Length: 439
Ligand code: SF4
Image (cartoon, rainbow, N blue to C red):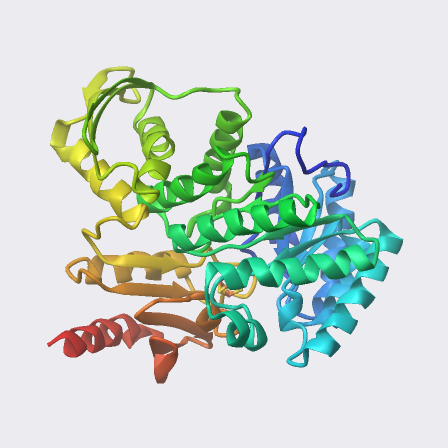
């Protein structure tokens, strides 16, 4: 239970999202939470970077209750167990990566056990959120930076929960790589089954980007799991206004809870090639339906190619042929890239932004995409903060990481190659470095 919201089998899939306001801007955060609730978010996460933000969290919750908004709040904690412990009484859930609490594993375990006691006392749930790319040294030394490592790490923390007789726990194993995230959740589901325990899972593709690509990538990863009965709460992470995430998350929840079906009307199969015919009620719906109908099959290599025909309705209700202006081909290209079968453009990783973001992430991401569209076979990350960005951008070849104070660090792989680049020059510098490297 996260406040009044049950998460688990036998209950509807819970769509959630996260604020991208600064937590100390209480008015903006409250206003965004209300818009999220109105759009259909069942849980709302807010970043809580340090102890000084705990009173802000308490005040946000108080004002939301005053406004009649009872949507449970989740405090997002990255490193500080003290902050997690301090904020736990004021929210319905805390999201942590206990492996990052302390470099010494025994000390991290002790801090985690302390948090569990506080959560037990206050009826607060915990999300153990382990992202590919920020697993911590100990786990990667033992198992590598792999889906196996993610599942093993989760099982270690779940064992500690069991030892402490604490079951109000949900687990996430996110990655921006759809293959890695699907495999990690499948391994964890199997490991829990073997152990004879079932903890609910929070499923998402992290740093999925924006626009069509972000929606398609999220749907490919999340639907692959929901269609197997893996996943109880979901977040579609988009580098956009977080309210825009909710219709996509609602679509996935409705579809895998059986409230809606696909607009697919016919499938012709020739070997591993599929031709799909749609009669979709909108362009967006075609995109989501196609991602869920064929994403998993591409990801699991059951099929190699998919092409699209049929119609979708424009906003005035006129039927538009799917092939018009190359849309069908574009959709197939996007889907193959999201399932990591063929890369027709650079692969972008972009965090959704949160209260730690110190620059206009959405605008910068658009600039980076526009200036790098010609560079194929390269993975480019655009990350909102220097605290978590470098760790979270996982297997990116290049990274644009906001430092704050209008400065940017540029990363090549895991290493910063330039620091403190003025943000007015940073996109040019990134493009120059990538092009020089490829020359
Ligand atoms: S990387 Fe992005 S989403 Fe993650 S903490 Fe930093 S700003 Fe927030």
